[in-house]
Length: 283
Image 1 (tube, rainbow, N blue to C red):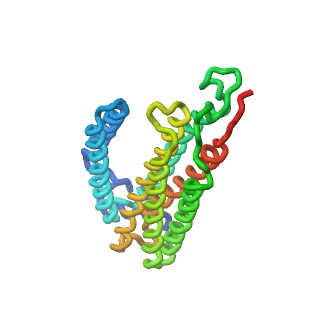
Image 2: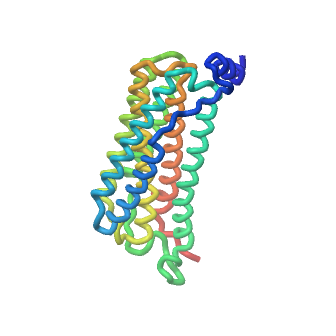
Image 3: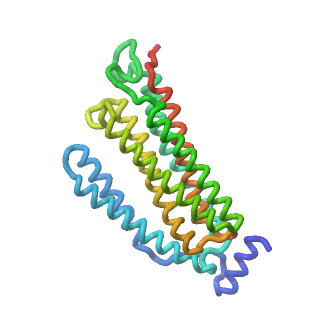
């Protein structure tokens, strides 16, 4: 029986005339949007010396919204009449579109970086200019950045191991693979925090190079933290036995997201840390 016919069968048996799940009214989209707006306003004010409390409140509201919203979705997923095969296919399309939007998000940062790196005269106004700008001391790419690259590449293999174990009904391999991936994600975040604390330049009043560097790598770091939380939720669900070889989209979405984070970091390492240690002369 095909997925569509199976979904239609479930819909008929449940009294519905179509196989789609019509969600109940929820306050979390509105609360999440307001929390994100509060965070942005607080972040802008914090960069100007005020608004740190507003930023923290916004972040706490976002975390709380994520928790209760995910809780509601997980409760729905336990009811096979709600997450029919057609609905699960829509969830996959939604995750693909979300990751595509994230790709374009980072394309903007790379565009800004290469715009300044290839045409550094737009920064200094001089006829002959270099990138990075004069006086900027860059990181050694084969120190902490290289270690972080190895950590993320290893985490990609452990999450793949977890996925393989799940497909073959190996629950122990699933939990071990997820656990190791979470630890590697935390290790990456720790190393990046150490790197930022030792940075020879600063985000505030540090010029164009530091602004692009911290925005690109900082937002990637935020994505690593979000991905680690995502995998942690999956780890607890795996311990409860929520995933089966046939139904495990929650884990699959987390694995897709984590591989996306891995690939973005490879581009950051090659373009900003390695190639960007310059100098690149303007023509």
